[in-house]
Image 1: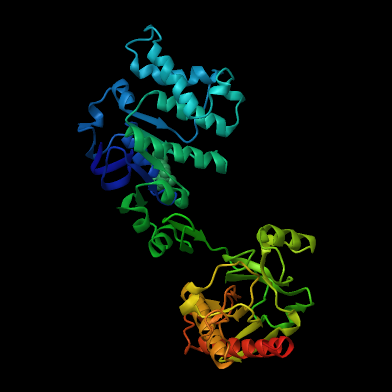
Image 2: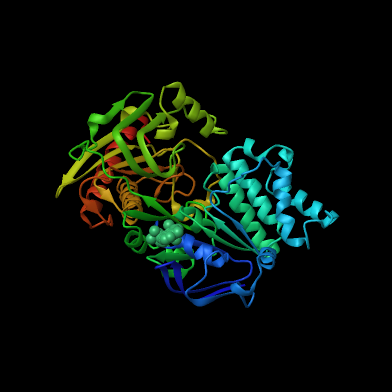
Length: 489
Ligand code: ADP
Protein backbone atom coordinates (compact mmCIF):
# COMPACT_ATOMS: atom_id res chain seq x y z
CA UNK A 1 0.00 0.00 0.00
CA UNK A 2 2.72 2.45 1.04
CA UNK A 3 6.42 2.17 0.44
CA UNK A 4 8.98 4.59 1.84
CA UNK A 5 12.33 4.06 0.11
CA UNK A 6 15.55 5.63 1.34
CA UNK A 7 13.88 8.91 2.23
CA UNK A 8 16.07 11.76 3.43
CA UNK A 9 14.80 15.26 4.02
CA UNK A 10 13.03 17.72 6.27
CA UNK A 11 13.02 21.50 6.27
CA UNK A 12 15.09 23.94 4.24
CA UNK A 13 18.66 23.68 5.46
CA UNK A 14 17.69 21.08 8.07
CA UNK A 15 17.51 17.44 7.05
CA UNK A 16 15.54 15.75 9.82
CA UNK A 17 15.14 12.28 8.35
CA UNK A 18 18.05 10.18 7.20
CA UNK A 19 17.64 7.29 4.77
CA UNK A 20 14.30 5.99 6.06
CA UNK A 21 12.79 2.87 4.46
CA UNK A 22 9.67 0.95 5.47
CA UNK A 23 6.54 -0.60 3.98
CA UNK A 24 2.94 -0.59 5.16
CA UNK A 25 0.59 -3.34 3.97
CA UNK A 26 -3.09 -2.94 3.18
CA UNK A 27 -5.22 -3.32 6.32
CA UNK A 28 -2.26 -2.76 8.62
CA UNK A 29 -2.30 -0.48 11.68
CA UNK A 30 1.17 0.99 11.96
CA UNK A 31 2.15 3.07 14.98
CA UNK A 32 4.93 5.66 14.70
CA UNK A 33 6.60 6.16 18.06
CA UNK A 34 9.72 7.92 19.27
CA UNK A 35 10.74 10.71 21.60
CA UNK A 36 10.01 14.40 20.92
CA UNK A 37 11.97 15.68 17.97
CA UNK A 38 12.73 12.21 16.58
CA UNK A 39 10.98 13.02 13.28
CA UNK A 40 7.48 11.56 13.67
CA UNK A 41 5.65 14.65 12.40
CA UNK A 42 8.17 15.16 9.63
CA UNK A 43 7.67 11.66 8.18
CA UNK A 44 3.94 12.17 8.61
CA UNK A 45 4.09 15.37 6.55
CA UNK A 46 6.12 13.62 3.85
CA UNK A 47 3.72 10.72 3.57
CA UNK A 48 0.77 13.10 3.35
CA UNK A 49 2.48 15.08 0.57
CA UNK A 50 3.00 18.31 2.54
CA UNK A 51 6.79 18.05 2.58
CA UNK A 52 8.94 16.79 -0.29
CA UNK A 53 11.78 14.35 0.24
CA UNK A 54 15.32 15.56 -0.59
CA UNK A 55 16.28 12.07 -1.66
CA UNK A 56 14.49 8.75 -2.01
CA UNK A 57 10.83 8.25 -2.86
CA UNK A 58 7.46 7.49 -1.30
CA UNK A 59 5.19 5.18 -3.28
CA UNK A 60 1.46 5.11 -2.62
CA UNK A 61 -0.21 2.23 -4.43
CA UNK A 62 2.94 1.95 -6.55
CA UNK A 63 2.87 5.60 -7.71
CA UNK A 64 5.09 8.29 -6.26
CA UNK A 65 3.28 10.66 -3.94
CA UNK A 66 4.63 13.57 -6.01
CA UNK A 67 2.70 12.34 -9.07
CA UNK A 68 -0.71 12.67 -7.33
CA UNK A 69 -2.72 15.86 -7.63
CA UNK A 70 -4.13 17.13 -4.32
CA UNK A 71 -7.56 15.83 -5.22
CA UNK A 72 -6.33 12.42 -6.41
CA UNK A 73 -4.37 12.08 -3.19
CA UNK A 74 -7.43 12.96 -1.09
CA UNK A 75 -9.34 10.07 -2.64
CA UNK A 76 -6.75 7.61 -1.40
CA UNK A 77 -5.35 9.24 1.71
CA UNK A 78 -7.02 11.17 4.53
CA UNK A 79 -5.27 12.98 7.36
CA UNK A 80 -6.42 13.70 10.88
CA UNK A 81 -4.02 16.33 12.17
CA UNK A 82 -3.32 16.76 15.85
CA UNK A 83 -4.86 20.18 16.34
CA UNK A 84 -7.84 20.12 14.06
CA UNK A 85 -8.88 23.78 14.07
CA UNK A 86 -12.21 25.08 12.89
CA UNK A 87 -12.00 28.62 11.56
CA UNK A 88 -15.63 29.02 10.50
CA UNK A 89 -18.76 28.17 12.44
CA UNK A 90 -19.83 25.15 10.41
CA UNK A 91 -22.28 22.60 11.74
CA UNK A 92 -21.10 19.07 12.44
CA UNK A 93 -22.79 17.72 9.32
CA UNK A 94 -21.38 20.49 7.11
CA UNK A 95 -17.90 19.82 8.45
CA UNK A 96 -18.16 16.09 7.83
CA UNK A 97 -19.60 16.77 4.35
CA UNK A 98 -16.43 18.66 3.39
CA UNK A 99 -14.77 15.28 3.38
CA UNK A 100 -16.71 14.47 0.21
CA UNK A 101 -15.01 17.28 -1.73
CA UNK A 102 -12.37 15.01 -3.25
CA UNK A 103 -15.08 12.86 -4.82
CA UNK A 104 -16.74 15.78 -6.62
CA UNK A 105 -15.66 16.98 -10.05
CA UNK A 106 -16.35 20.62 -9.27
CA UNK A 107 -17.82 22.86 -6.58
CA UNK A 108 -21.18 22.84 -8.32
CA UNK A 109 -21.63 19.10 -8.58
CA UNK A 110 -24.91 17.94 -7.04
CA UNK A 111 -24.88 16.36 -3.60
CA UNK A 112 -25.64 12.70 -4.39
CA UNK A 113 -27.50 10.07 -2.44
CA UNK A 114 -24.20 8.24 -2.02
CA UNK A 115 -22.62 11.37 -0.49
CA UNK A 116 -25.46 11.59 2.02
CA UNK A 117 -25.20 7.88 2.88
CA UNK A 118 -21.46 8.09 3.46
CA UNK A 119 -21.76 11.20 5.64
CA UNK A 120 -24.57 9.73 7.73
CA UNK A 121 -22.71 6.42 8.09
CA UNK A 122 -19.45 8.00 9.25
CA UNK A 123 -21.34 10.22 11.71
CA UNK A 124 -23.04 7.11 13.12
CA UNK A 125 -19.77 5.21 13.33
CA UNK A 126 -18.03 7.98 15.20
CA UNK A 127 -20.99 8.61 17.52
CA UNK A 128 -21.70 12.20 16.48
CA UNK A 129 -24.92 11.76 14.48
CA UNK A 130 -27.02 13.02 17.38
CA UNK A 131 -25.43 16.46 17.25
CA UNK A 132 -25.08 16.82 13.51
CA UNK A 133 -26.85 20.20 13.54
CA UNK A 134 -24.70 21.64 16.34
CA UNK A 135 -21.87 24.03 15.57
CA UNK A 136 -18.44 22.45 15.77
CA UNK A 137 -17.01 25.31 17.82
CA UNK A 138 -19.61 24.57 20.51
CA UNK A 139 -18.41 21.01 21.03
CA UNK A 140 -15.93 19.62 23.54
CA UNK A 141 -12.38 18.76 22.40
CA UNK A 142 -13.19 15.06 22.31
CA UNK A 143 -16.38 15.52 20.33
CA UNK A 144 -14.60 17.81 17.86
CA UNK A 145 -11.89 15.18 17.42
CA UNK A 146 -14.55 12.69 16.41
CA UNK A 147 -16.08 15.18 13.95
CA UNK A 148 -12.74 15.54 12.15
CA UNK A 149 -12.28 11.80 12.19
CA UNK A 150 -15.70 11.47 10.56
CA UNK A 151 -14.67 14.08 8.00
CA UNK A 152 -11.52 12.11 7.18
CA UNK A 153 -13.52 8.88 6.88
CA UNK A 154 -16.11 10.58 4.66
CA UNK A 155 -13.30 10.87 2.12
CA UNK A 156 -13.57 7.06 1.91
CA UNK A 157 -9.80 6.83 2.00
CA UNK A 158 -7.79 3.66 1.63
CA UNK A 159 -5.19 4.97 4.01
CA UNK A 160 -5.74 7.12 7.06
CA UNK A 161 -3.00 9.15 8.76
CA UNK A 162 -3.58 10.13 12.37
CA UNK A 163 -1.43 12.39 14.52
CA UNK A 164 -1.99 11.51 18.17
CA UNK A 165 -5.65 10.64 17.62
CA UNK A 166 -6.40 10.06 21.30
CA UNK A 167 -4.89 13.35 22.46
CA UNK A 168 -8.10 15.09 23.48
CA UNK A 169 -10.05 12.00 24.37
CA UNK A 170 -10.91 10.64 27.77
CA UNK A 171 -10.30 6.96 28.52
CA UNK A 172 -13.56 5.57 27.20
CA UNK A 173 -13.31 7.49 23.91
CA UNK A 174 -9.67 6.51 23.51
CA UNK A 175 -10.67 2.89 23.73
CA UNK A 176 -13.69 3.39 21.50
CA UNK A 177 -11.73 5.19 18.80
CA UNK A 178 -8.93 2.67 18.73
CA UNK A 179 -11.33 -0.29 18.81
CA UNK A 180 -13.12 1.33 15.88
CA UNK A 181 -9.92 1.89 13.89
CA UNK A 182 -8.85 -1.67 14.54
CA UNK A 183 -12.23 -2.96 13.40
CA UNK A 184 -12.07 -0.92 10.18
CA UNK A 185 -8.61 -2.20 9.34
CA UNK A 186 -9.84 -5.77 9.82
CA UNK A 187 -13.22 -5.45 8.12
CA UNK A 188 -12.71 -2.89 5.37
CA UNK A 189 -8.98 -3.22 4.72
CA UNK A 190 -8.40 0.43 5.70
CA UNK A 191 -4.72 1.08 6.28
CA UNK A 192 -3.91 3.25 9.29
CA UNK A 193 -0.68 5.02 10.15
CA UNK A 194 -0.78 6.80 13.46
CA UNK A 195 1.63 8.73 15.64
CA UNK A 196 1.42 7.69 19.28
CA UNK A 197 2.94 9.21 22.39
CA UNK A 198 1.40 6.55 24.57
CA UNK A 199 3.50 3.43 24.04
CA UNK A 200 0.98 1.26 25.86
CA UNK A 201 -1.89 2.21 23.59
CA UNK A 202 0.38 1.78 20.58
CA UNK A 203 1.42 -1.65 21.81
CA UNK A 204 -2.15 -2.72 22.47
CA UNK A 205 -3.58 -1.77 19.10
CA UNK A 206 -0.87 -1.64 16.43
CA UNK A 207 0.15 -4.53 14.20
CA UNK A 208 3.63 -3.08 14.01
CA UNK A 209 5.55 -0.14 15.43
CA UNK A 210 8.09 2.11 13.78
CA UNK A 211 10.41 3.45 16.46
CA UNK A 212 12.20 6.64 15.38
CA UNK A 213 15.35 7.97 17.00
CA UNK A 214 17.11 11.11 15.75
CA UNK A 215 15.46 10.90 12.34
CA UNK A 216 16.42 7.27 11.80
CA UNK A 217 14.55 4.02 12.25
CA UNK A 218 15.68 2.35 15.43
CA UNK A 219 13.40 -0.64 14.78
CA UNK A 220 10.33 -1.50 12.72
CA UNK A 221 8.79 -4.67 14.07
CA UNK A 222 5.96 -6.20 16.11
CA UNK A 223 5.07 -4.25 19.31
CA UNK A 224 6.53 -6.90 21.58
CA UNK A 225 9.93 -6.62 19.84
CA UNK A 226 9.96 -2.83 19.70
CA UNK A 227 8.74 -2.39 23.28
CA UNK A 228 11.83 -3.93 24.71
CA UNK A 229 12.74 -2.58 28.13
CA UNK A 230 16.37 -1.74 27.35
CA UNK A 231 15.62 -0.33 23.93
CA UNK A 232 12.90 2.01 25.20
CA UNK A 233 15.03 3.11 28.17
CA UNK A 234 17.86 4.01 25.81
CA UNK A 235 15.79 5.75 23.13
CA UNK A 236 13.54 7.67 25.57
CA UNK A 237 16.34 8.17 28.14
CA UNK A 238 14.21 7.20 31.12
CA UNK A 239 13.67 4.28 33.45
CA UNK A 240 10.71 2.10 32.65
CA UNK A 241 9.70 -1.46 33.33
CA UNK A 242 8.06 -3.83 30.91
CA UNK A 243 5.22 -6.00 32.23
CA UNK A 244 2.72 -8.24 30.49
CA UNK A 245 -0.80 -6.88 30.22
CA UNK A 246 -2.98 -8.81 32.71
CA UNK A 247 -5.59 -9.94 30.17
CA UNK A 248 -4.16 -9.73 26.65
CA UNK A 249 -0.77 -10.96 25.44
CA UNK A 250 0.63 -7.45 24.91
CA UNK A 251 3.41 -5.59 26.70
CA UNK A 252 2.89 -2.60 28.97
CA UNK A 253 5.68 -0.12 29.67
CA UNK A 254 5.45 1.32 33.15
CA UNK A 255 7.08 4.53 34.30
CA UNK A 256 9.02 4.32 37.53
CA UNK A 257 8.59 7.50 39.56
CA UNK A 258 11.56 8.81 41.49
CA UNK A 259 11.54 7.25 44.99
CA UNK A 260 10.20 9.72 47.53
CA UNK A 261 12.42 11.00 50.30
CA UNK A 262 10.53 9.22 53.15
CA UNK A 263 12.86 6.67 54.65
CA UNK A 264 11.03 3.49 55.45
CA UNK A 265 13.89 1.25 54.35
CA UNK A 266 14.69 0.15 57.89
CA UNK A 267 11.10 -0.90 58.61
CA UNK A 268 10.41 -4.58 58.70
CA UNK A 269 7.04 -6.28 58.83
CA UNK A 270 6.67 -8.25 62.06
CA UNK A 271 4.20 -8.76 64.91
CA UNK A 272 4.16 -5.06 65.78
CA UNK A 273 1.72 -4.67 62.88
CA UNK A 274 -0.41 -7.66 63.83
CA UNK A 275 -3.74 -7.14 65.55
CA UNK A 276 -5.54 -10.21 66.95
CA UNK A 277 -9.07 -10.76 68.12
CA UNK A 278 -11.35 -13.81 68.09
CA UNK A 279 -13.09 -12.35 65.08
CA UNK A 280 -10.14 -11.54 62.84
CA UNK A 281 -6.40 -11.32 62.57
CA UNK A 282 -5.34 -8.13 60.87
CA UNK A 283 -1.92 -7.05 59.71
CA UNK A 284 -1.65 -3.38 58.74
CA UNK A 285 1.51 -2.52 56.91
CA UNK A 286 2.80 1.08 57.08
CA UNK A 287 3.27 0.96 53.30
CA UNK A 288 1.79 -1.17 50.46
CA UNK A 289 3.26 -4.62 49.97
CA UNK A 290 3.47 -6.39 46.64
CA UNK A 291 1.25 -9.40 47.09
CA UNK A 292 0.40 -12.67 45.41
CA UNK A 293 -2.46 -14.45 47.10
CA UNK A 294 -5.47 -16.70 46.85
CA UNK A 295 -7.67 -14.64 49.17
CA UNK A 296 -11.42 -14.09 48.92
CA UNK A 297 -10.82 -10.36 48.41
CA UNK A 298 -7.70 -8.90 46.75
CA UNK A 299 -6.63 -12.23 45.29
CA UNK A 300 -4.07 -12.47 42.48
CA UNK A 301 -1.29 -9.93 42.32
CA UNK A 302 -1.42 -6.35 43.55
CA UNK A 303 -0.22 -3.87 46.16
CA UNK A 304 -2.02 -4.06 49.49
CA UNK A 305 -1.58 -2.59 52.98
CA UNK A 306 -4.12 -4.56 54.99
CA UNK A 307 -4.34 -8.33 55.40
CA UNK A 308 -7.33 -9.90 57.10
CA UNK A 309 -7.93 -13.49 58.19
CA UNK A 310 -11.51 -13.57 59.39
CA UNK A 311 -13.11 -16.23 61.49
CA UNK A 312 -16.51 -17.47 60.29
CA UNK A 313 -18.67 -20.20 61.67
CA UNK A 314 -18.50 -23.69 60.14
CA UNK A 315 -22.09 -23.24 58.99
CA UNK A 316 -21.20 -20.01 57.13
CA UNK A 317 -23.23 -19.78 53.91
CA UNK A 318 -20.65 -19.51 51.12
CA UNK A 319 -23.01 -18.84 48.19
CA UNK A 320 -21.98 -15.18 47.82
CA UNK A 321 -18.93 -15.09 50.01
CA UNK A 322 -17.06 -12.41 48.03
CA UNK A 323 -19.85 -9.86 48.28
CA UNK A 324 -20.45 -10.69 51.92
CA UNK A 325 -16.73 -10.33 52.70
CA UNK A 326 -16.63 -6.94 50.97
CA UNK A 327 -19.57 -5.77 53.06
CA UNK A 328 -17.93 -7.13 56.19
CA UNK A 329 -14.70 -5.21 55.52
CA UNK A 330 -16.52 -1.98 54.73
CA UNK A 331 -18.64 -2.43 57.88
CA UNK A 332 -15.41 -2.57 59.90
CA UNK A 333 -13.89 0.49 58.24
CA UNK A 334 -11.39 -1.59 56.29
CA UNK A 335 -10.89 -0.39 52.71
CA UNK A 336 -11.43 -3.47 50.47
CA UNK A 337 -9.38 -1.93 47.64
CA UNK A 338 -6.30 -2.03 49.87
CA UNK A 339 -7.01 -5.37 51.48
CA UNK A 340 -6.39 -9.04 50.98
CA UNK A 341 -9.11 -10.87 52.88
CA UNK A 342 -9.29 -14.56 53.77
CA UNK A 343 -11.76 -16.59 55.79
CA UNK A 344 -11.29 -19.50 58.12
CA UNK A 345 -13.52 -21.68 60.26
CA UNK A 346 -10.53 -22.28 62.54
CA UNK A 347 -10.49 -20.57 65.95
CA UNK A 348 -8.09 -17.66 65.71
CA UNK A 349 -6.64 -18.21 69.17
CA UNK A 350 -4.78 -21.15 67.59
CA UNK A 351 -2.79 -18.85 65.33
CA UNK A 352 0.99 -19.29 65.22
CA UNK A 353 3.38 -16.59 64.01
CA UNK A 354 7.09 -16.03 63.96
CA UNK A 355 9.75 -13.72 62.57
CA UNK A 356 12.81 -15.51 61.24
CA UNK A 357 15.98 -13.71 60.20
CA UNK A 358 19.21 -14.70 58.56
CA UNK A 359 21.84 -12.99 56.42
CA UNK A 360 20.04 -9.65 56.59
CA UNK A 361 16.77 -11.14 55.30
CA UNK A 362 13.69 -11.71 57.40
CA UNK A 363 10.30 -13.27 56.90
CA UNK A 364 7.27 -13.00 59.13
CA UNK A 365 4.99 -16.03 58.97
CA UNK A 366 1.41 -16.21 60.24
CA UNK A 367 -0.53 -19.49 60.07
CA UNK A 368 -3.99 -20.62 61.14
CA UNK A 369 -4.53 -24.33 60.69
CA UNK A 370 -7.31 -26.84 61.08
CA UNK A 371 -7.64 -30.15 59.33
CA UNK A 372 -11.37 -30.91 59.44
CA UNK A 373 -11.45 -31.25 55.67
CA UNK A 374 -7.99 -32.72 55.10
CA UNK A 375 -7.39 -34.10 51.62
CA UNK A 376 -4.83 -36.36 49.99
CA UNK A 377 -4.12 -34.44 46.75
CA UNK A 378 -3.25 -37.66 44.92
CA UNK A 379 -6.75 -39.02 45.61
CA UNK A 380 -8.83 -35.85 45.52
CA UNK A 381 -11.04 -37.33 42.76
CA UNK A 382 -12.71 -39.38 45.46
CA UNK A 383 -13.95 -36.18 47.10
CA UNK A 384 -17.10 -34.25 46.23
CA UNK A 385 -16.50 -30.50 45.87
CA UNK A 386 -18.07 -28.47 48.60
CA UNK A 387 -16.94 -24.86 49.04
CA UNK A 388 -15.98 -24.26 52.66
CA UNK A 389 -14.11 -21.51 54.47
CA UNK A 390 -10.31 -21.95 54.28
CA UNK A 391 -8.67 -24.17 56.78
CA UNK A 392 -4.91 -23.70 56.53
CA UNK A 393 -4.24 -20.07 55.80
CA UNK A 394 -0.56 -19.26 55.36
CA UNK A 395 0.78 -15.72 55.30
CA UNK A 396 4.39 -15.09 54.34
CA UNK A 397 5.65 -11.51 54.67
CA UNK A 398 9.08 -11.05 53.14
CA UNK A 399 11.23 -8.09 54.13
CA UNK A 400 13.09 -7.83 50.85
CA UNK A 401 12.77 -7.29 47.11
CA UNK A 402 11.37 -10.25 45.21
CA UNK A 403 11.31 -11.10 41.53
CA UNK A 404 8.15 -12.66 40.08
CA UNK A 405 10.06 -15.92 39.99
CA UNK A 406 10.78 -15.64 43.71
CA UNK A 407 7.08 -15.05 44.40
CA UNK A 408 6.16 -18.26 42.62
CA UNK A 409 8.96 -20.23 44.24
CA UNK A 410 7.86 -18.89 47.65
CA UNK A 411 4.43 -20.40 47.08
CA UNK A 412 6.01 -23.75 46.15
CA UNK A 413 8.38 -23.75 49.09
CA UNK A 414 5.66 -22.81 51.58
CA UNK A 415 3.40 -25.52 50.17
CA UNK A 416 6.10 -28.18 50.42
CA UNK A 417 6.71 -27.23 54.05
CA UNK A 418 2.98 -27.48 54.75
CA UNK A 419 2.75 -30.93 53.14
CA UNK A 420 5.63 -32.10 55.32
CA UNK A 421 3.73 -30.99 58.43
CA UNK A 422 0.75 -33.05 57.27
CA UNK A 423 3.01 -36.09 57.02
CA UNK A 424 4.87 -35.54 60.28
CA UNK A 425 1.64 -34.86 62.17
CA UNK A 426 0.10 -37.93 60.54
CA UNK A 427 -2.96 -36.09 59.25
CA UNK A 428 -5.30 -38.42 57.36
CA UNK A 429 -7.78 -37.80 54.57
CA UNK A 430 -11.09 -38.90 56.16
CA UNK A 431 -12.55 -40.06 52.82
CA UNK A 432 -9.62 -42.11 51.53
CA UNK A 433 -7.92 -42.99 54.81
CA UNK A 434 -4.57 -42.11 53.24
CA UNK A 435 -2.08 -39.38 54.31
CA UNK A 436 -3.41 -35.88 53.70
CA UNK A 437 -1.35 -33.23 51.88
CA UNK A 438 -3.40 -30.22 52.94
CA UNK A 439 -7.05 -29.32 53.20
CA UNK A 440 -9.56 -28.66 50.45
CA UNK A 441 -9.69 -24.90 50.95
CA UNK A 442 -6.23 -23.71 51.93
CA UNK A 443 -5.17 -20.17 51.08
CA UNK A 444 -1.76 -18.62 50.74
CA UNK A 445 -0.36 -15.14 50.65
CA UNK A 446 3.13 -13.96 49.82
CA UNK A 447 3.63 -10.25 50.47
CA UNK A 448 6.95 -8.50 49.97
CA UNK A 449 8.08 -5.06 51.06
CA UNK A 450 10.04 -4.68 47.78
CA UNK A 451 12.65 -2.76 49.78
CA UNK A 452 16.08 -3.83 50.90
CA UNK A 453 17.89 -6.97 49.82
CA UNK A 454 17.27 -8.22 46.28
CA UNK A 455 16.00 -11.81 46.48
CA UNK A 456 15.77 -13.34 43.00
CA UNK A 457 14.97 -16.92 44.14
CA UNK A 458 13.03 -18.71 46.86
CA UNK A 459 13.58 -22.40 46.11
CA UNK A 460 13.90 -24.58 49.21
CA UNK A 461 17.67 -24.21 49.67
CA UNK A 462 18.06 -20.53 48.83
CA UNK A 463 18.43 -18.03 51.70
CA UNK A 464 14.82 -16.95 51.38
CA UNK A 465 13.57 -20.49 50.73
CA UNK A 466 15.21 -21.74 53.92
CA UNK A 467 13.53 -19.03 55.97
CA UNK A 468 10.14 -19.69 54.41
CA UNK A 469 10.30 -23.48 54.75
CA UNK A 470 11.52 -23.29 58.32
CA UNK A 471 8.96 -20.62 59.27
CA UNK A 472 6.00 -22.28 57.59
CA UNK A 473 6.93 -25.68 58.96
CA UNK A 474 7.29 -24.39 62.52
CA UNK A 475 4.17 -22.22 62.49
CA UNK A 476 1.95 -24.79 60.76
CA UNK A 477 3.05 -27.48 63.22
CA UNK A 478 2.37 -25.22 66.20
CA UNK A 479 -1.01 -24.04 64.88
CA UNK A 480 -2.05 -27.59 64.10
CA UNK A 481 -1.02 -28.88 67.51
CA UNK A 482 -2.99 -26.13 69.23
CA UNK A 483 -6.00 -26.94 67.07
CA UNK A 484 -5.74 -30.66 67.80
CA UNK A 485 -5.30 -30.14 71.49
CA UNK A 486 -8.61 -28.31 71.55
CA UNK A 487 -10.59 -30.28 68.96
CA UNK A 488 -8.81 -33.61 69.64
CA UNK A 489 -8.78 -34.87 66.02
P1 ADP B 1 8.45 14.73 16.50
O1 ADP B 1 7.14 14.80 15.78
O2 ADP B 1 8.98 13.33 16.59
O3 ADP B 1 8.41 15.38 17.84
P2 ADP B 1 9.37 16.51 14.43
O4 ADP B 1 9.29 15.72 13.18
O5 ADP B 1 8.31 17.50 14.70
O6 ADP B 1 9.55 15.51 15.66
O7 ADP B 1 10.74 17.30 14.50
C1 ADP B 1 11.98 16.72 14.15
C2 ADP B 1 13.02 17.81 14.09
O8 ADP B 1 12.65 18.74 13.06
C3 ADP B 1 13.17 18.63 15.35
O9 ADP B 1 14.55 18.82 15.57
C4 ADP B 1 12.49 19.93 15.03
O10 ADP B 1 13.07 20.98 15.72
C5 ADP B 1 12.67 20.05 13.55
N1 ADP B 1 11.56 20.81 12.92
C6 ADP B 1 10.27 20.58 13.07
N2 ADP B 1 9.53 21.45 12.34
C7 ADP B 1 10.41 22.28 11.73
C8 ADP B 1 10.30 23.38 10.83
N3 ADP B 1 9.11 23.82 10.42
N4 ADP B 1 11.43 23.96 10.41
C9 ADP B 1 12.64 23.51 10.80
N5 ADP B 1 12.83 22.49 11.63
C10 ADP B 1 11.74 21.87 12.09
